[in-house]
Length: 501
Ligand code: NAI
Image (tube, rainbow, N blue to C red):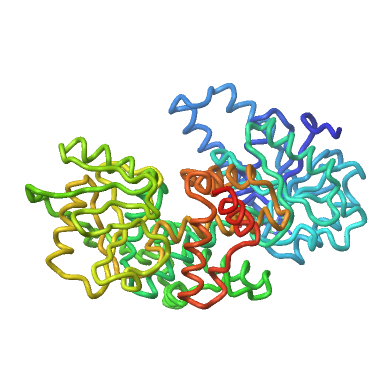
């Protein structure tokens, strides 16, 4: 086993990521040499690090002694040769293949042959960076997330030639630094940037089809447990950055239509509407901007005679049963029902299975999916375009009485949360099916790398592979593109579900 818990670490690139990596390594007790090609970058990095550590000390989050030690452990250097005794190099320079390649080839003539070389690249193939090295087996990806001292996840990326013992040593080192490492193969987007694509893509498709507004989409997904909705998150990341990651994953997959970037986002980029940093994206960040809002009417009394039946056993159904009890409304249970939802008098309010309401019936009503429902949550709903207005008003009032804030959207397959989570599960299945990582790694990576409330395989456990596959098949039929094709792994799991029924 390769041991790197002690020894000098050379961090190259004193930008946002390199400074964070240097801090974490120094805090863990390593001697850190920090190098940057740009004059003054080192000094600037140390100054900004001192400020942020002082801030931690003043808030009681770090002792003054720890701050001293951390800063003492970092030595800015002006030439790579001054760190020839390093046991590990972590590169965090500009995201350009040729520049990274040249650096690693140069490093091989500087450091010892046992020194491990790691790249913090977020999107370039580790296999490609290693091409041209004398010892490509010693190059590994060590992909931190921003801000490095805060974010727990580290993707340990193995290229085609990476020595597994080296990947394991980096895995152990990340653990020693109190991080949560996951192994991944070097494929476009690694784990997080790949599996997260549908979170943005589905929102952008919904916007393109005018199904709902950015604020409505964000409200529904935040009610589903996501810390931020996709539209506000894209505004925060910056549409230029988000569009470029999507485009690079699309190109790297030989223009697989499933990863096609969105025209909605391209328009924003072309117009310089990058989001928060430019003052405007989906939302307006100027001081006098009117904040979007959703007003839910107060509940009106329900008619004295109503018949309510709960169908299925999904979390939303258990929630409805609690809410019905709370308002003293009698109901029956049909757990064996072949659909999930709630019937209100003669109206079936079904949890979406991927069909459009208008395909189903004159007065069909659909509700979005929810795995952690709570009173006051926003939930998308829709009805067939032929539905009676009177009837739909009474459905909306019934939903409000059940404690949710219903958001009526244009009839479209999979609504908002269901289609987004189904697509995240599908992409996660594809990654595992292609040997990129394990199911456990996916769950950890998505929870810790992008703060998802649960991992895709956690959702799959609460849903069912057969239902997710059915929803995606329905969407695939509807859109007749390639985006919604079911992953071979999800299909297998779905067939197993059906065989076991
Ligand atoms: P940055 O622009 O803040 O810093 C890069 C630094 O590298 C600059 O100080 C620059 O002077 C220096 N540099 C450029 N070429 C060099 C060379 N040949 N030798 C030595 N120094 C050189 O960039 P940032 O954001 O810190 O990103 C660095 C790397 O980390 C990139 O590969 C990026 O894709 C990756 N990354 C970035 C994340 C982010 O959120 N910013 C997240 C995860 C990975």
